[in-house]
Image 1 (cartoon, rainbow over the protein chains, first blue to last red):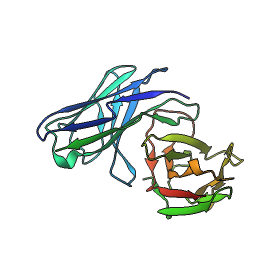
Image 2 (cartoon, one colour):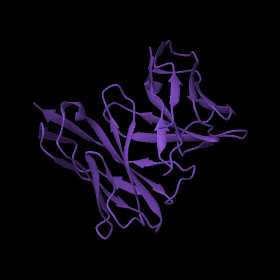
Image 3 (cartoon, chains in turn green, purple):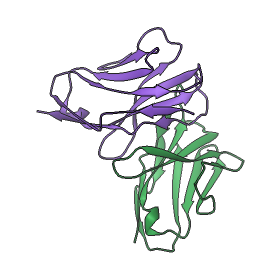
Length: 115
Length: 117
């Protein structure tokens, strides 16, 4: 299947700093990528849809100024958590549609801990 | 609006036995796709199986099969001959539209499956 790579897998930062997470489609082009957030033992909640060459579409309740998304190329989308606070600690996982049935292929996920 | 319900927070199964994970859904769209994903403790999401709303036959993929009952709006995952490596969280998900398009998935709350030796 298609491969999506996400980096870093784990990051610890101090409160008030910004953290960038990269999501790459390695063997296919993705004009659209999706960013999800997952709390421990909970479901995946869609944060935003990343569109190559245009602005991201954010879900209701997601602060677009805090979670900056940039889809600079057909293989790269980035999520920047700005001025991170402890409540932003979570598992962030990106995905891209890459299969014949439109299934999403997911990156490995990034576990963010804000101290 | 779409809604996916998984009513089993946790399930246990003996190794080599079969297990069914429940999933019900609700949508007003006649065209939709249903997916199952496996999430081991490492966190990665592994695609298992897909069923389109117009598919006449239940989807199968190796030891995985999807028991699709359209009238009941259920899409249960059946895992046959369980293995210890099947222990993981399992998510049911739905997408509007049957065929591949760049649309997000809506996920259920998940079922934690534990396979006992």
